[in-house]
Amino acid sequence: MNWELTDLELARASKTDPAAFGLLYRKYADNVYRYVAVRVPSPEDAEDITAQVFEGAMNTIHSYRGDAGILTWFIQIARFRISDFYRKRNLDESEATVDDSIQDSRIRPDDLGLVTIQNLLGRLERQKAEVVEMKVFAGLGHDEIASMLGKSVEATRAIYSRALKQLRKIVEEEEIYHHEWFTRRQ
Amino acid sequence: MNGSHEDNNLESAGARALEDRLYRCSHRIGAPDSLYHRLDLILEQRLGSTRLKRKRLRAAATLVAVVLSILTGYAMLYDDPLDINEHTAQDQTPAPGMETTKPVGMPPVQSP
Image (cartoon, rainbow over all chains, first blue to last red; front, side, top):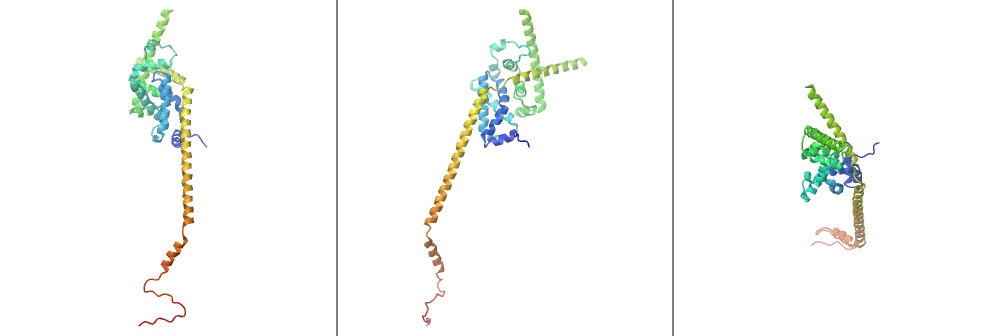
């Protein structure tokens, strides 16, 4: 017999038993944290927002009907929280994630750290960046991203593909630059 | 034609390689322990308040049951059985014009 509960069963159980919610955040905290971490300036902000996301979800779990996956629902809450975060600080997301010290740094081969990724995504159009954030960092499927953005699955795939091509171009240029800079110094 | 096809292939291969790098980086980012600790604390608080609510509900239900049983006992103790007899007696009173039982040995009353 399979004793493992599905996300929907856990979400339903959470309405009466908060302990069931513990299993849900243990399963998805990494996904939500990654998604938030690439969108906000510091790891501390990412931790605060992720905690708020799960606290909010715990408070409103009774309103979750199971139309979308539970991770999609968490990411939807995270999107609102991130917008709140920037609105309260009167900041624009594209300006906030890339500061001067990051712009001056060069991308090194095989070293795509969090800051580098924020820098790269900051150079994409918001929609392209968002699709990459949801696909790679939140771990959502194209169908879930499409339903969240109100687009067709094909359109989402196309945006993702274009975003990857653009990112690749940026990385290549930066790596060539880094290589030239490095050999000149030698 | 072939050249552009090759270019496309190379381009997609490059994009896939970058995608792999992005995924590798993504998996290196993990929620810190402090986040789990915070979430555990929130959950414990929630569990505590749920238990308290359940305790209060149980206490309220017990109180209602006790009050109901006291009221029932009170009603049984103070319910006057004479009241019932009185009602019964009233019920047995013959309606006007109906015959009544006469005492034994009395002559029948003659009507004029």
